[in-house]
Image 1 (tube, rainbow, N blue to C red):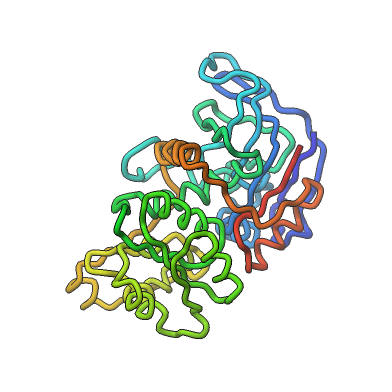
Image 2 (cartoon, helix red, strand yellow):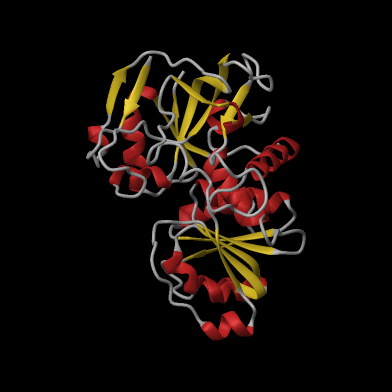
Length: 337
């Protein structure tokens, strides 16, 4: 079979290597998956650039989000059968409840865990879950990181519901999932972006208002004025943007921080945090329970992830370059078979 490799020391997509390797065999408690689609996330561009997610001089099979069909099961596996359509679960050790200290690393395709950019992969049987019946493989591959992260941001800790307003920043995979999930929960969604054509598409998806952050420096206060203050801001930029998000919140509201683009110290308004009892919460993908709840919502509400574009398996380096280039509306997916 063929498999893409990120050699140690390589920090550019041009250095990815396509190689032939033996087909892996599942051991006890494992399943083998014929890979149909793999999605790429912002984390993967960071891992490529390093040092985040890179373990010294180790070569690495990249990417973490896979959708495919089980084609072989190892000894002792009874919950899966050949032909089952599955995706992976991002963390190995987080089934439910608060995030444990040890979740099994930062996911597949990082540090010591090889990823899924291959024609076939072997995973532990408890590391996969049923993919939504209404989705294609390409769409389902977007769930493990982007979909579950959005679910956690919108429905974790302080879940939103009818009458709430949610502010969504950007138009990447997490942002669009958040818009869909919040809308399905009955919340009103308002959006911030940096391009007018982006706003038009967000409004067409169900956002009720849009502010261009490049032309309205006080975008958060502007949105708060229009909507009366938000219950939640889904911040896909990072910690440095938290302070700019606070004016969008109503009292008791939350900024869910999911982005790593601007990762660093935040300058926060302490008077606003204390006086208005605001919450800033870090979101790191989510649990297996969150993933299963997301699958149920996708099927019940007939939600479909937004795919910006797809790439053939042979053009995987182009997908990495597109991810690093930004300006996406939805997810990038590599179709394998």
